[in-house]
Image (tube, rainbow, N blue to C red; front, side, top):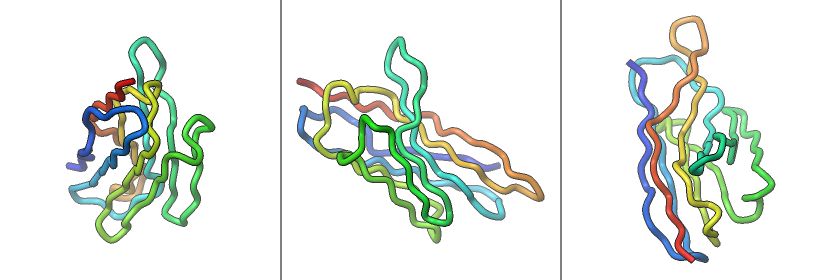
Length: 119
């Protein structure tokens, strides 16, 4: 069974940094996209950062210049380095991946990790 496990959330003061990790485990053939989403209370889940196995990167405008997504394909892991955090970054952060299982790509979500930024 394929699983995504996030780690690295926590409480930090505004201007601080955190790094989130997400590792995929289980039996699968390959991983295409590995993304980070977030959901703040009362708001819809939104894409924060996107990466493909080919190295394409995209960021939400609100995090450009502050957040960096990277991945280790050999370790099936994606990272999100978050610098200069702001109170509005407070949310539950979710890892998302498109993973080839058998002959088809399936979509998986992690359980989420809380990031809280105090002012």
